[in-house]
Image (cartoon, rainbow over all chains, first blue to last red; front, top):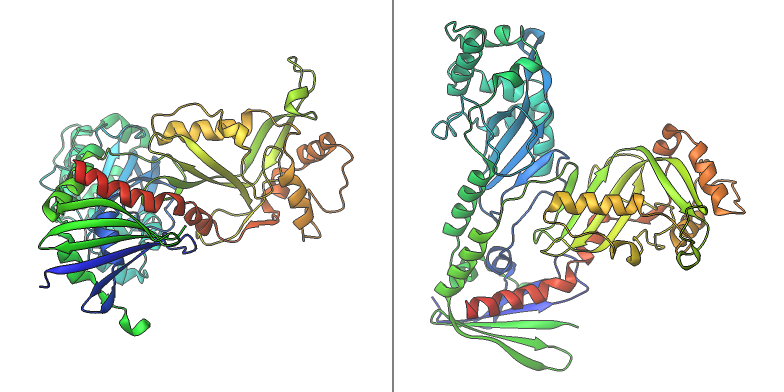
Length: 256
Length: 265
């Protein structure tokens, strides 16, 4: 590793990217240093979604690392297998996107709309332990559904996908912890019958949206919690300036 | 002014100068800051950040969270219009005319600071919801807007203080539609008429208004479908580019501020 590195950040009002370009000068060569700006000097939250879905509720400030997004849906009746209509209260997709663009999704319920970050958001079937177990690997979902790359597009597609049957179907597969726990909640609401995840949709279809709201939720996650997890992850992942320059540089000498 | 920040890292210690390339004048920004200090400062900034939930229909928020685009669907707005300039308005409301006008998709762009004080605001019209940020948007041909569809400075100077994004957007929306329209500024209407290329636009084509009251009266007589489906004269080719243009003024200052704050932290 060289002991001395020089970094020039040039401010050019005419440049549309972000007004600043950065170059690393080392051994007479010039390297692109934008990586440094993106990862350290620009400490503010990074949003790489060019066009947010209109129902976006939260985006984590995690820079170029893992990202958390929360998307809101109004109470509605969802069409699922065999054209059954099932009721859902206010519901939220918590989407975790890692640095390699792997996706995981949790489905959270509320009995009213979310306005304040520390209001609980969750359902009795979703615990912190099962946070990831409830998630699905969206890479498969994306492959199967031929969704192209680009986070904004994927998020928009996910909403429509969820409203058709993609996410719902995966979430309620019989071996899914969330489905079993949710079935238990429905069973309790129905008078303590034994939970039957296999027939969950059938059972749910006999209820109304108001029923699902009246069942209430057990406080579990809130956006404060998600936010804290996200920023801890982001801050743990910060490399040193030298590491970033050496790992992120690309040779610009040939451009000249 | 084109400026450079020179950063030198020697054995993990960072020195930095801010260089004005026109005067070749160098200003020392920091001396002997260790990389560990810089990293710790970065971490403290990230950990200090507060979670925010977004109001509905936010379509873009900049990385530094100082520029935001949001939109509203078509609907009706009741507006108060006075044919006089502000200084000639009497205290009574006799000179006010009330109109209920149909409004198409609206795209709002605002710049604000960390305390949610708005310093720039635009409103555009569209005949469809945003499908990408690099798409064109049209003039909002109302009084109180400059020729580029930017809201009159005097209006957003009166926008009340806000504590969060919800309040800020509520206040901004309220000021656009409910602060009253007068003849202090009519550039955007003039510009929209001048740029209208559509032969069948319900608001502009073939219509000559002797008085502005007639213009708003005609607008109020149109139905929502006609307004919502109309093509609006081009005001900005790329709304994201517009947003990016407003990032230039603060970026360099932010980097320098970050480094100097890290030194003193």
